[in-house]
Amino acid sequence: MIFRSYFGEKDMPFKRPEFEKVADNIIKYVQYALIIVLVITVGLAIADAAGSYMDYDIAPKIAIIVSVCLCGVALVILESISMYLVRAFKIKMVFFSFECLTMVILGILTGSVLVVILFCTVLTECYMNLEKFVDKFIMLVCSCAFYIISYVIGWVLINAGASVMDSVVNIFSGCLYGIIALVIDFIIVEILMYFYRKNVELRHALKEAEDSKAALREAYAKLAETSVYEERNRIARDIHDNAGHSMTAVIMQTEAAKVNMDTDPELAKRSIIAANMQAKNALEQMRASVHLLAGRTDDLALKTDIEQIIMETASGTDIKIRSDLDDIAVPESVFRYVSNTVKECLSNGLRHGGATAFYVEMKQEGSALHLLISDNGSGIPGDIQEGYGLKGIRERAAELGGKCTFTTEEDDGFETDIILPLPAAPAAPAASFHADSQPMSPAAAASPAASSEASPAAPSAVYSDAGTPAVSAAVPEASTDVFASSDSAAMAATETLDATYVASEAIEEE
Image (cartoon, rainbow, N blue to C red; front, side):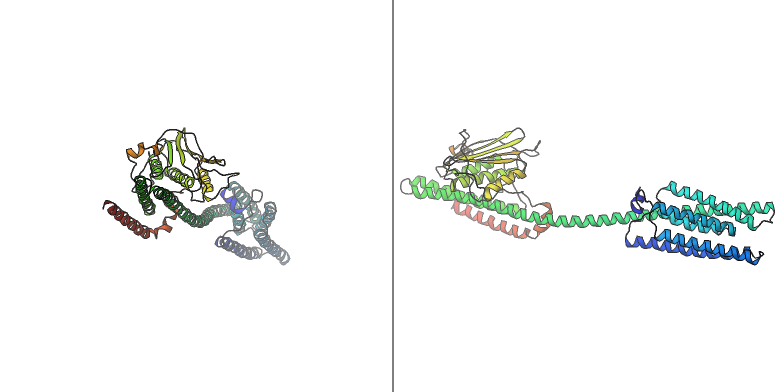
């Protein structure tokens, strides 16, 4: 049915839609050639008729020649109209019937084998437009029958005085010649049209491939641009979450040291040491972000990472943070989201909720991860107005296939409840996040600040317009080329931060 799609509808198999310019020109050139052959053959048939009737009287001779001329002109006109103007199948078949009648009359009047050339010319144009092989074969058989009838009658009328043997031999040879010519024409046209169809099909396929290629290029460009923005946002959020959380902890610890400087110097000293450690951790986090840009990550379990965040937040302060954490293997996107969300909630609870106690719970419930963060802060009166931070946490949870709900009452804290789906069979026990991070020591893990005793859930504070969690841990593949030019800058920044870190280590040792 391939040919039908190119040359016509089901009820109009002769109708051809427009092809590419080259394909259209090929069809037009073939049609011009057919008309020229038809005109030349009609001229030869008229000349042959004039020669065949030399012995006739002048009046009958002129009548026959005029009749041959009229039939020839009519045939050329009918074929031209059918070829260039007619598209409907039924009308075209009517024209073909009149053309066959005209050729039969010419065959009877001339008794010449030249008529077979007229049949071949008309049939060629029909073969070019017909779709089904059966239809074309039926036309071939009918044309052979018409040719034989016209040739036999014409030869008998012109050669009435010939012997029976000569008549039989000439009629048989003429009919055989005509049939062979019609069959050869049928085969040649069918082969040529087969290659033509394949050529048209190939042109369409190439055009579709070019269109698809252009569409893919456009989609790739848009994807690369989108990936650039997503990666920039991810890096900005990553740095904001890490640095914001660390600086909040440093401020709380230095404020505690200032308050206890006169009354409890030892406690103030511990607060200053904790602030120093937290500042150092901030530097490590900055190094981790730059290492990530450079494509380097180290493995760290999610539970260990959250415990380390809790320890760093509570160290050197009066803040109490209790936790109940399962060791869960998660994809890197979930790892990053959970880690950053915990930092966000703790940091915002301290800065905006005035919280003094937190509860962090992470449990695996079937094929889902359940994260609950609550605090005893001031809460929010009335409806929750989602800022950049809250909206980002909720939207990112939805992107990961989970859901996030916020609960709060005035003077009764704030609670963030998140449920995320987990892969059926995680490939790795832990995801990567921090570069150059150190696991929490057993002593720190045993401290009250990181204890695992359960407590009633009090809401968690997430009020600020702080950044939302990261989108991905690695630069998206589509934007690799875009970020390639920044590799050297990222490596240089990594070396600078590494040098700063080494210097801080040396100062601490001294």
